[in-house]
Length: 227
Image 1 (cartoon, rainbow, N blue to C red):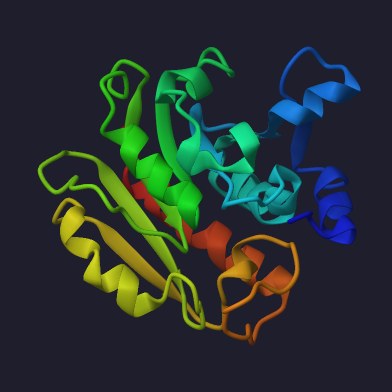
Image 2 (cartoon, rainbow, N blue to C red):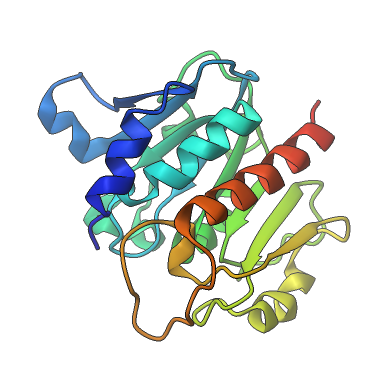
């Protein structure tokens, strides 16, 4: 699913961040994904894996808000076949894309978040500097309850695909101190900007409001978890 053009343009024009393609800087490097750098970086990074068949650019408006509010440098790779769940690359393949950052969060939307949970338990995660997870309308299918990862889960009130109830039912796979924030008015697609998704609920907030709620929740969490 392609991103909505006005939202992506607004992100590119946001003076609080810089957006660049991953790769060698040529136009075709957009095929590899994007990196969002805040003007006031915290020194920490977030690898954000898109939902199934959702273009990375569809998350630019929401994630530019997260970067500006939290100071996180955000890598949004384009997974193989646009399906993060089937991309075999380890966590270190993503964190290596932006040298110089020692503390990394893994995260993603929907199935991208499910894949992030798997990477967080991978053999290279610790060496790659992974300290925790930030899940957008997603949950872990693998058991991380015995790890020391810090985990934030953002649940949309009207999410029809990763419902608040499903997220709560999977909470046993997370470390006991994990945090879940219910965002009022958001549906599944509100974590990005790519239009209506089949099976989803109806959002009752505008995209700008959802952007602010997401950004503030992530910034509070990462500030409280700072090393």
